[in-house]
Image (tube, rainbow, N blue to C red):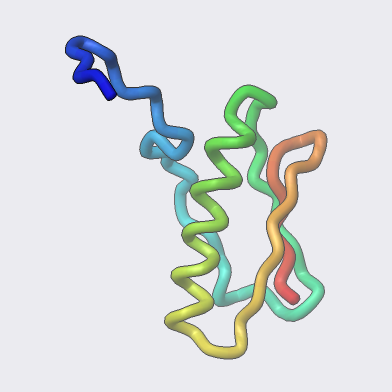
Length: 79
């Protein structure tokens, strides 16, 4: 192994994406919401949303979600 200097860190996928407030507590089973975004931002947005859904589910037992990329952006369903 060699020590290399001056190699920059790669850009993170999440990179502090701001989605805004999500009404997760107001969703009933079978309901969904759409977060509109461009194709270029979908990977970063869905990563941010999935982390948020996991945290919400851990704090609020009985809530399960699914998030998927769709043509318009990212859709979140309550399961």
